[in-house]
Length: 359
Image (cartoon, rainbow, N blue to C red; front, side, top):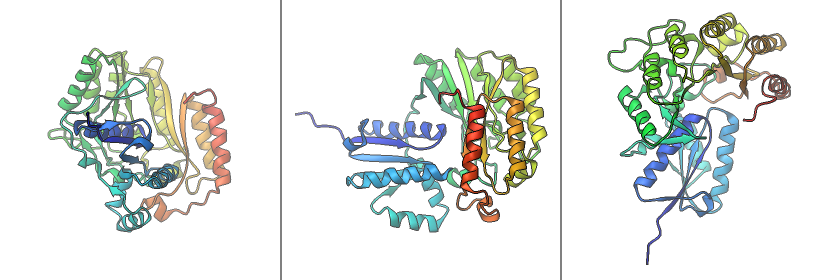
């Protein structure tokens, strides 16, 4: 009689980086002889990889967790929520009280022998760094994921080579801010601090990947203030680098940008877009926008609309502002834009930019 293997299920909330992390989690279970199932109700152990960046994502994770608990499953929670819990004792006590019997496990406890091929919609996901050194006032990532840690370039290129050997020709390089890749690596000698821009290793890495036998190289995410001339030149040089560039701007109002600690102005963002368009043929842009940040009045919102009209974004990921516990904006700025107005502004931008999008 053949003994059946223990079964697991991984549920992912949040961004593409979390999707990549979930593939690593799956590899941990596969290496230990577990069997993955597609329905969580069939699993012996359910892993929930959480997102804490948006209140809506946090709420969805909690809702799923409560549902799973009803079936008396072994539940493991990992990801951003655990990162925040480890730095916020009040949050840790509150969460453990609300969800007794749940194991809260940091991502770094999933130790594996071989990095898996991580794919999403036919594209191989290759993390180049973890965490973030930027301190945008609204963002919980530095608390949830820690300071930026760059992977050695050799490891990254080995992942790309492995994907090519498996017949995969589309690569997505992932980091919270790919532009600052290498700031912690010995001998790099650069770091991005505010408006100061120092030489980055990312253009070198991107060129190395583009030189390989791949059909397409994409990257997310990056910040406008350290999108260097070197990076623009590399994108322009290699035709297999994706012409859809994700360039978050968050708000078009300078006072709001300053409160967000974004380190650029509306005009500086528009000048960067103009420069990229002048150097890179057939370039298109996608972006992130926060709607209803504290202090965003009608005039400030119209500045955001103006940026959208001038750039002509192909896709915009629109987020209604929600204060995240422990962030600077949550401590300093009252959430003073009514939800009704946030929703109206969201609809207007969505109709303007995303009307024909299929995502």
